[in-house]
Structures are given as C-alpha cells and as structure tokens.
Length: 198
Image (cartoon, rainbow, N blue to C red):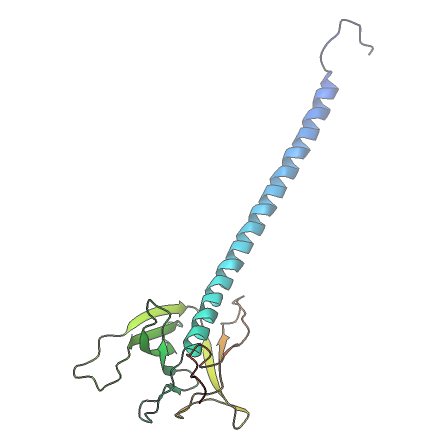
C-alpha cells in the first residue's frame, strides 16, 4: 500500500518489528546482567575464601618469624608435634607482647590459636585463661613439620632446645571443598633483633 503525502505514523508491521527487536534487546540485557551478577557472586566467594586463607598464611608466618629461642631445656622456645605447636613468640600486637602460644585444631574442624602472656619466672599464681582466636574453619586436618638443617630432613615433631630451620604447615580440606592452598613454610627468627658481632 502506497502512503500519501499526508500520511504520518507507522504501519502495524513496522510496530511489530520494532517490538520484536526491542524484546530481543531486553532479553539480551537480562541474560548479560544475570551472567554478570553470577560472575560477581562467584568472584566474591573466591576472594572471601582466599582472604581467610591469606590471613592464616600471614598469621602463621608472623608467629614463626618471631619465635624466641630459649636456653631452658624444660621450657624450650618451640615444642611441636604433627598437629600441635606450643611456642614462645612476640605477637604482632601493640608493643610486640611476648606470649606462650598454642596452635591446634578443635573437634569442630577449626584451626585455633590460643595464647597467654609469657612470664620468664615461675608464676606465683595460676596463669590467666588463654585468649583464643579462630583462624580457619572447615579444616579436615592439618599437618606440621620441622626442618633440621643439620640432618637436611623434615621431622614430624620438635623437642630440641634450638629452633628448627623451617616450619611447614599443610592444610587439608574435606572432599568437595573448593579451597586449595599451598604449604606454608616459614623460617624462625627472621624478625629477631640481630646481635652486633664481636
């Protein structure tokens, strides 16, 4: 049908085509928005999981780097087993408070750090209750190992007076848990004040 010079507006076919194109555009924008939100949510979850593991990594490295060697064989600076670590370290708190710390896992699968202020002399009264902080939850198991430079070997336990050359922490998560983290290896005494030679 031919339009006359005075005809204005759109034909029904033109309106239908325009509505179909608009519908396809809205559908594409909707799918793109859904994909973007799903990707954002996935990335947020991955960053949250990585953030908690990164906090464990930094805390463990700081504890090991600030370990304090001791001359007392009855109270060494570090006494460790495959699933427990008991040590004297300078906590990264105000003033670098020296503390007796314990690292272990409780029955709920939480990696927990406990500490009490370290007292050089034999205490006259019972020590205060240990402060406790949860480092990570949902852990199936963790394993500690201690490097002996003299023997060039890893050990599952450490009861010697001197500090080990390295301490390794391996985290194992339950099947189906997407979290993965490489072994955390830290060297004791890296942040101790150096003595002047002579």
